[in-house]
Length: 225
Image (cartoon, rainbow, N blue to C red; front, side, top):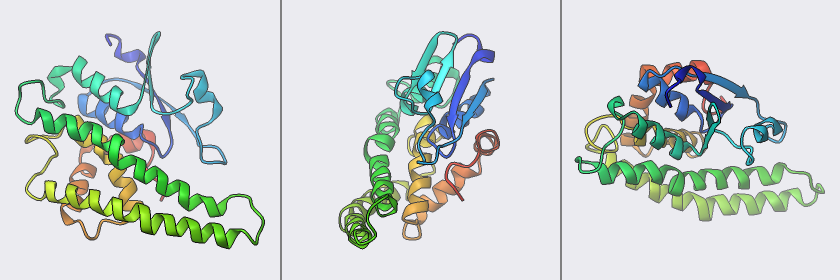
């Protein structure tokens, strides 16, 4: 990507694309932000389909190139800019941890966060009033007996991993940390992190990064207040 002035981040509010803004801020790259509000159903607006056929965010465009999926975007940007210091190259210490956490964020932890939102929204949908208490009961049962135990397992493992570390891989911030930020913000919002002090301290370190703050200024908060 040789023309940074034409780099455009298609950013959906309250979404994963905050991570792309944050990475670019850490790299010191010039870019434009095109913001998209969520619709009444809390989904991306149809205008995003004009950028990418799935109509999802984040999407990165540069001239005639279009790149989707936050993990792919982060990995591509880091590989194309190896001097940014946000990756761990093959053969370097911490490489396997870097790859694991970079892909774990969306492959393992984030699906649980998405499922939690889906189940909690079910009772809010249109249905006969006498069905709503049943829908609410089923939804709560799914979250408490299926999702919460899995989330607890994941957060315990991550808390143990971070117990003696500042960062997920190696001794520096990497794209893996940036990728992990969104599911952890979601976990903090939906389940709380009081039982996971190492994760709380880690999340505070991420939020304190000046580049993280600049990304918030340009793209808005990651989750609703």
